[in-house]
Length: 146
Image (cartoon, rainbow, N blue to C red; front, top):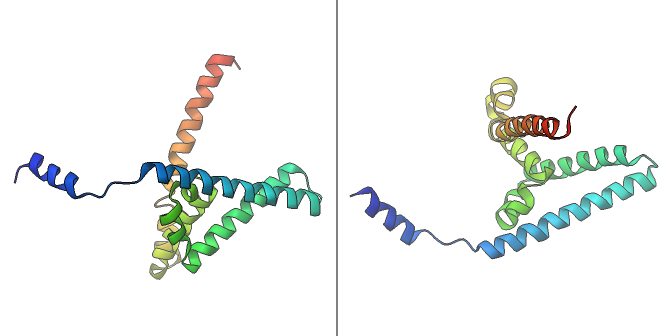
């Protein structure tokens, strides 16, 4: 079978993604996570009387803990299937990626299992985040001076 014909058959039988629905879900769920984060920030700064900077740190830690816990329990994957980018783009997606990688390889031990594979998915996010921050820093330096 020729490659073109095969590609046509695959394209014909591949289910179409509801792009507009996915966009709305991602917007709403990402917004809900944002509201949760802001609520946590207000909670920490009000009730624990810490600065906004410290409250933001506590908020991030809390969101990472919740996402990791829900991944370990096993129902965060279902949320991701439903909400897609709404759960993946915020810090909860990063926590989910790291936790699911570590859970997948935990049987191989701490060093060769978890230690070697925990950054398997999230490593590319870290790498490209650092590289893009470097280049944007250079662009900023070039545009606005040092």
